Image (tube, rainbow, N blue to C red):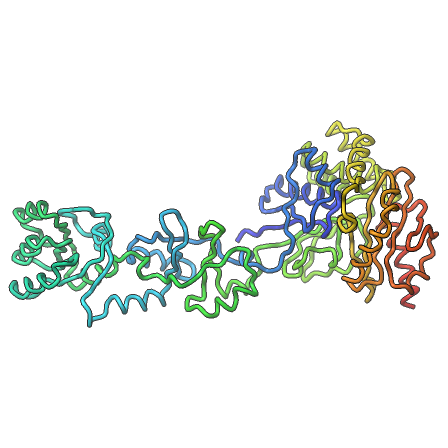
Length: 550
């Protein structure tokens, strides 16, 4: 099974997180691995949307959660059978199918029913009930194919009809009485080398005459069969075998299980397991929104690993991972933040370097693999570096960031300073946006022992707009804090013109006394020369929390 590997940034993806996922997925594809997909668990910020739109690149696929779903475990190498195929041909196909089950579909490929041995056995008992005259649905064509019969006279061979099957073994007088009893029905007669029975069938204008053991119809009767609209075929088998095969010529739809409702790829495993345990087949088809069969899910499928694996970029904290991540194997982590609480069951590739942006690391992986960086990807990576380093002015900026930015600038013919102003400006506009939206667009949750807190950040060229709406922002921060039962929730408003920040804090009252930043107003503090959340603010906050813990 070819697994899909999703490359995720953190829950609320900033520009560096999103572009790193896109660029790394493209690198994997250029290396020949087409099963790598860039993904995001949250909505893009205005700045990031601007970048993807400007360079006309598809943004990472939006996947809000990865709770185990049917599509992550189902068998996708699935054969189907048409509803009008014979039971004989379908059973032969089913023998070779995984789990010995077959979804039955119509001419458009839409799911109709499910063929499994339990349903087949129950329906065949009804069909072959010795206390009732055999009655089957079939066609001349299905009978021909099932018996490998020789056609002699054919009329409307594709038409499906319901017929009574009679065995021409009685005396002619008794047989004529039997024919007369069923004269209002479609009749199929199976008989051997008996001219008088052949003639009686043709005179009665039955639907189909099946002559067994390879015997041939007399020429004069053949002409009469043509005139009377009677189809005639020759079975190479004895009468007993031919009779059994006649039952197996029934269209498979008549003997399949129409009571089994299919699942959908996005159905949760917790929902499907109880139903799987209740059906005799222990397998259920999976269909898409158009009712086309996409796979089959079995109880045993959940004993294996999912067909999904993960790569994390721009974070290594469990609290920042997409919901449900713990159910899947993590292949790699590429990051530039502090080490978090993430642990894995298996050894993985872990790249963590103290640079200004994960985009710097991704760009240099292209160079290490000696893979030419496509111009559109180079543009994204340059934007990621510029955004995360505040146009290479942040204290987190390293020489590697600068050198990489220059390299990408040369590839793309983009001016670093001008591009930086464009994307920072696109992200700093908050007019008309709700405070909750601004807070959540780049929010990260941290855990220090038993203490939980969140830090959001936004870069602006004029902090006065947020300051004028301080009550609204502080109120939303308090809602965020209470929803997580956190010690505090804060918003770092970074002024890109002065390379300093304001900190809006909603917290437990006792925590306020531990904050030693210069106070501007109630719950608002001034952080001179602080622009980096990960390198400057988080270490300072950790110190304050340590004091509380002690």
